[in-house]
Image (cartoon, rainbow, N blue to C red; front, side, top):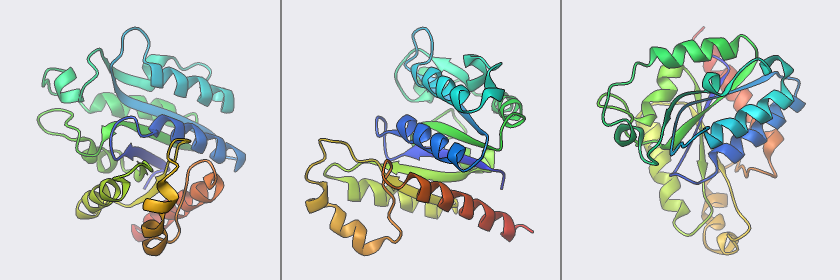
Amino acid sequence: MSKRIFITATNTDIGKTYTTIQLMEAFTKMGLRVGVYKPIETGVNGLPADGSLLLKHAQSLNPELKALRINDIVSLSLPLPAAPYVANKGKKIDLALFDRALEKIESLCDIVLIEGAGGLMVPVDHEHMMIDFPRYFNALTLLVTHCKLGCINDTLLSLTALKNANLPHLWVLNCRSDDENFTQVSLPYFKNNFDPLFMIGQDNTALAQALLDKINQENSKGE
């Protein structure tokens, strides 16, 4: 497995971009040159908002990325804020487009974070869903989940999908300031059933190390 991490979530607007930025900073502090890639961004009118934010932050952490432009980071920009399948009118996507972009980015970094669009079961075209991308990219999957009521169900559904697809993965909670009931209604279940339990913002270093350890573990299986 390459040092690639595919960041997905239980749904849209869960915090993939925020999590990606937090991890870029954590890996940089660990001495790694970070790179970032967002293959598809929908809801784009002008410059891709998430991609632009990711590129700016990555360039501030890794000067070797200074020559990259937004089209190097976001390969496919679509105006309709919808699943790529819908936003691209069902057209087949040539995944080689993503390979070429990743090759360019990886030549400038030690580890690359790949941010997906929406959740795992988002349709990309007639042949692919977002859950197909981690295997295609030979990447470890990081699932980001929310802390609102319903997060247990949403988390377990996505983890089951990853397990059934036999995809190596870790997961992390992204709690926000208005999730005041989380500690009472959801956290007890997670604490009793998952160890370790990672929360973005407070466990960034531990999560980054766990991701690297998982990548090394998967690599050793293939030797």
